[in-house]
Image 1 (cartoon, rainbow, N blue to C red):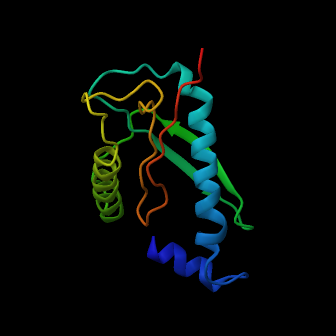
Image 2: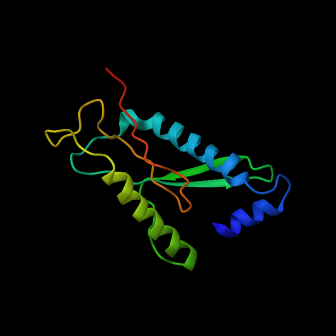
Length: 135
């Protein structure tokens, strides 16, 4: 991630393009993608889903969602994926533990996390609770 940020800083527009353009675009895209399927995600008490999103960034810092993986590989196949997978799992635990149940130990119908977005290395995503639409 640091190498990518350094690469971005070296180009036209300089430092901060990750924070100003790419990271916010990834957030908007992931939330929009999850909102399109929130009604089809089946709630299973005491569980959660982790999704992996693959992005492409073009030469103008346009950010494009390529695919969403329902069962992303957490294989430590390279030094980069080793660092990323460890960071994602740590962030997933932080996101999950930050969602506290109500006094009865359950999530209320309006606050139940249907889908959450976890952090990419560098804090790209923060916890985001998506709610089902009222019927």
